[in-house]
Image 1 (tube, rainbow, N blue to C red):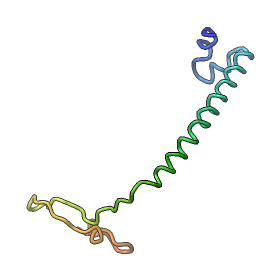
Image 2: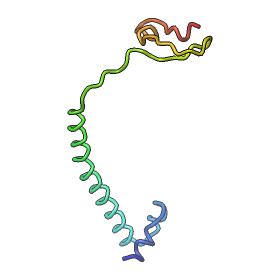
Image 3: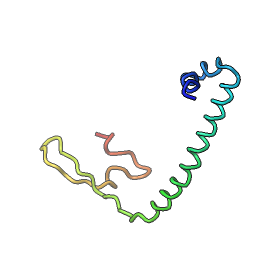
Image 4: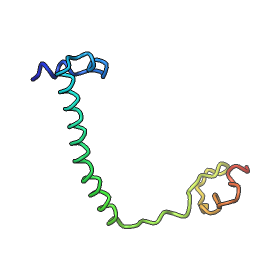
Length: 94
C-alpha cells in the first residue's frame, strides 16, 4: 500500500497520468475522505451554533475613545455623533 500512496501524491495532472486502477482508487478514496470530513464537521458546527445561542448578550459601547490631535488628551465622543443614518459623516467634513 505505501508504494501506491507515493504514486498518487502530487497534482491532479499527475493523477490523470496514473494507470486506470490506481486513478480510480485514488479518486474514490478522495471522495470518501471528503464525505467523512463533512459528515463529522456538520454535527460539530450544529452543536457550536446551538451552544452559541446560550451565550449571554453583551451590549456594545455607545462611546468611542479617541485622542485629540491638538492636545494629545483622550476624549470621548458618542457613536451617534460620528455616524447617523442618512447624514454625511462628520469625519469626512474636516
